[in-house]
Amino acid sequence: MTHHIVLGVTGSIAAYKAVEITSSLVKQGHRVTVIMTETAQRFINPVTFRSISHNQVITDLFVDNESYNPNHVSLADSADIVVVAPATANFIGKVASGIADDALTCTVMAAHSKVIIAPAMNDSMYSNPIVQENIKKLAGLGYRFVDPEEGRLCTGRVGMGRLAAPGKIVEAINDELDRKKDT
Image 1 (cartoon, rainbow, N blue to C red):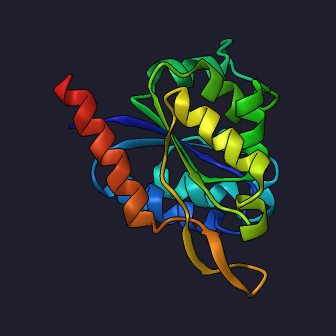
Image 2 (cartoon, rainbow, N blue to C red):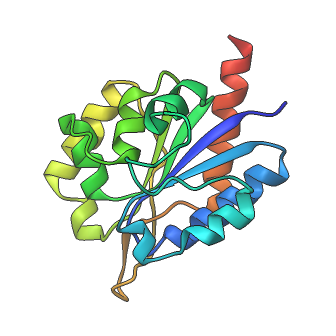
């Protein structure tokens, strides 16, 4: 069964792994729409996601359309699931605080479907009590998390904060879609 998956990509070195997630989901027959934050575009070009997903990539909250279509609302309405991978501390903090100031945070706020968040950040940031409190708050509100892994980080040191393996994230997406189908 084909599902519409909205994949948010935030500004992390792990953004390149979101290409593999997109490719896996497309190979499974899903329709994937990617939303990239401004900082994500500094790590990877939207053309890459457009080429893999065969869909428009949303990079701005204010997109000129021939017919008015507030993308963040229409995407949220049409999504079977919203996934943010990688999710930075900044993104998690914004959502936990109710800040919707870009296409991705607005879409997440408008989503009626399940939202899966896969954090990726420096180990010191991930273990910060504020970040952990934000994660706990969002989990309590029904957001699902795919925990990061311990491994080599972009700083060169080893610690907890590395984005979960793309296969693990895809598995969490499929589990959630199967759960939705069963209800």
